[in-house]
Image (tube, rainbow, N blue to C red):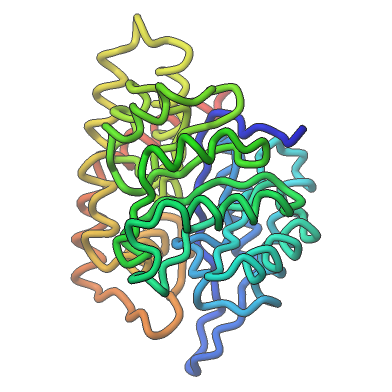
Length: 322
């Protein structure tokens, strides 16, 4: 029986590169390990490598596996229970399975997969194509599959709620990351699937609480890279102290919203890395063709983050004093 995906906060981490004048920018495994240790110390339930935030499309297969092997070793070295999820998206069934097999050998426990979208005119509004793709992948995958629904990077390909429910019945498909922001769709999926075998995750911290209220069981927040304590605290309060901590839960979500929007409203992955550089002391640059964030824009992003960062620092201080 495939391992179900536990509820929780799974942070999609960037891939770090050594800053060099050329476009080579080799992978910086030391910073990668440092960041994973930081996230695990904050209590995240897992990390996602090679997703959209991880610039998977900018890496070759060898680099992908280097990242995954580093993540696996780091998690094992610190004896963390954090799960390792690998983005393994490719346009064909064959190519996707190849990436999954490599990821499994490198220590990934789950594979997160986007729907195929290159041949959009032949797949759009074709639920049978999407169902066939995921089913064929899941049938042969050595590790459980997580559906990744992110219209923003798949030419607005948006997997229907009915197809998601149908796919959830497959024993090797254990969850979905909903980066469509559609709370209504999430409610339908939660109502029509078994939470013991299929985990619905919000794809953004800004709508984490609304997703939780309709039955979702976690989140994959890019925002968690700079403020993991806040996101974990919201999850823990909601799941363990809902009735007596509702006001605090609402307050935390309110702090998160504007801060989370700051990343992808202003310069996407480059903006996230720029903010990490200022807040954490590492982050570096994204690979070309993504452009660096200007100093002025960096200031704007960090200023927008400050309300949530203040709470995050308070929570981190309490955690370290225990």
